[in-house]
Length: 167
Length: 440
Image 1 (tube, rainbow over the protein chains, first blue to last red):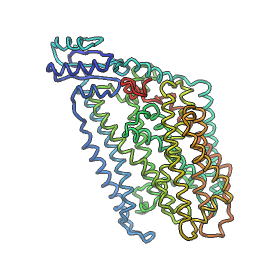
Image 2 (cartoon, one colour):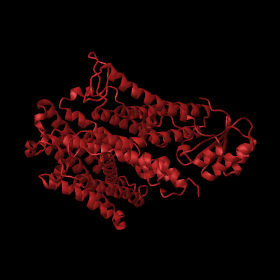
Image 3 (spheres, chains in turn brown, cyan):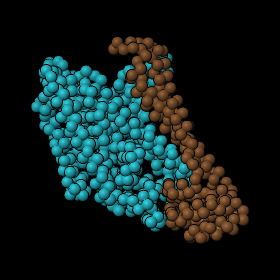
Image 4 (cartoon, rainbow over the protein chains, first blue to last red):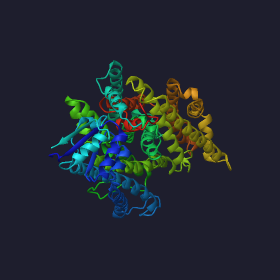
């Protein structure tokens, strides 16, 4: 994927990186992105990106699992209605256990699939120029757009070790 | 101070563990592979000649194989407890130790899963345990606790493996960017294209929280289900309502003890003393102490319940357990699980890795014996006095398969620690940047 034009600042200090993001947003730059070696909450909060919407997808997967678990138990019990131990053919208490396990299984699988899709799409749509230091010990703050002389100034004033233009 | 100065240092320390194994490590791999091969040969004898080569007979139809199954499932519990439950509780000490616990969980369940199949006698029919459409229109019996086990253990294995793999993604990306050649390609496979962008972290943090939320009830459900394999029957010594919490506490107890057993030599062999510190060992050993007290309470409660009220078969079985031919095993179990862990009340003991290692090895021995005592003594002393003369003695095939399972577990574990990071690099970097207790 061709990188979008913009300005990239490299930081070695977490607080300065967060400060740069806040300053850039305050200056009216709406498309500010970052890359970091760890999930630093300061940076995420500074970006004000809001919470991921995986909740509803994962919850749907878990509910689907409950239904699938009960359907499997009840469907197979009714298909071969053999009484064992004097128990009811459709015996709900033991089926709750299977429904719970299938709920966790499908919920986790859907959560994984949703993570793969959303993180992959996010990586492509809000790409940050690759630099191996961003997975080691540096934070990259990337402002998308043309011109951006003021963004360069803000990044430098915030304490960026290195500021460069990405064509 | 929010500098990332120690981030590279953490990464390099973990990367240094990924090199070619030394002489000791290679020797351990050879020993583990040899034990696993011996176990496989013993199993092949059982497949050729049938269960007659084992010591299983009336009335003891469940013995070492099911003991091993319960032991390894129990061991596997600590991984999810440390990684998921302590993550939700925001316990800081988990950061340096949870990866080892998760790895232990996955390989522990892989080992546990072998035993029901070995116990079947005819392992080629193992697929009958799973519901699948067939020409006879027969389905499995979902009212049986053995079927609950199949679903609980399979789910636990899959969710634990997903949890471990997802946790490795950012670390694999860090190692991918720091290496070259085949290692770069290898780590790239586990990194799934990770770049560490804000969008990735945003979704990752949320998904990780959900994995933890899913895994947490599994910790309690899986071993409860395993306990129902026994408690749902009406055999004296098994048929008890306290079994689920008793088994869950025991599982966490043995699992965390095995984590300490692995961590103490591992941090030395891999030179991770500055990442896995005495503080981490201290906090982990407190969990061992706490669960030891819960297990001790359960042992006492079992006897109090049996002795409360008129004489019963239950009381007779429990007296047999403590005074009969299996009494030496019972009292060894009590010493290992209830007495030796009390030493962990002493700060000086918790501060000494060698002492911790010794206590935790004893706990593992004790917890294996606990499962053996519960299973074998209850079956040896059932409701028919005619059966009481039969004493179960394991054959060399059963002992060989048990040793083989240890070899199988350690073989996977020893290979893993040289191929993928045993400490979470990204979480250690985060803790370090925030100057937490986990700072390197």
